[in-house]
Image 1 (cartoon, rainbow, N blue to C red):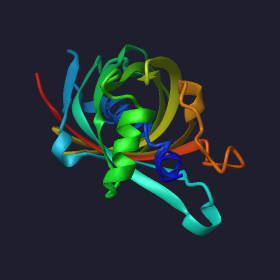
Image 2 (cartoon, one colour):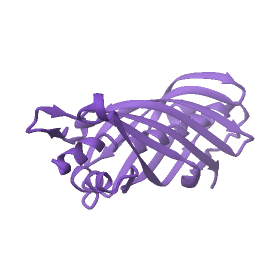
Image 3 (cartoon, rainbow, N blue to C red):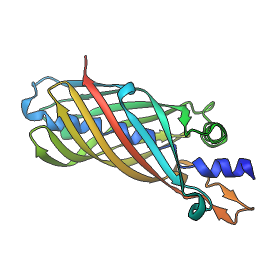
Image 4 (cartoon, one colour):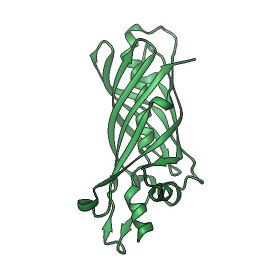
Length: 215
């Protein structure tokens, strides 16, 4: 039962990492009025970025939810500031084996039997179209971004709402939250007591992503 519980406790913590990084795209929109005509380039700063995912555990009324984090490997963004909504490109790579929740047994279950990180070592997001653009100030705004999340060997389109702040003209900070149904990526919802108790099948992703201008 311990092994089943470990799987259930962490099940939804996969898609989290990727969705956060997609938010970098909107940074280009915020600074578009100041931008030069040539394409703009941003590079993700993994050390300054944070991505977490939370999912309800079995017996959630007693145990609540489980939260874990993943490590960003790399990320980049290129966009034509003259028309960022349809000319932006982004690729974000996450280490599937880096999951950490503060409990080693759960972590091994997530990276091993759930994510199968040895077989699928990376979680990747590639996008994307930007829509619903709202400038909240001269250096901040909100939007949604559309892209493809590849997780556990399955690629699916997702749409993520983001908030963006531009510091000076070189540093972008993005924040957001989105919920995903992880069984859509072929991840089975774990159970307890021969299937009578199920973990939640929705993962809540929260992210804070930092990127700097690069070449």
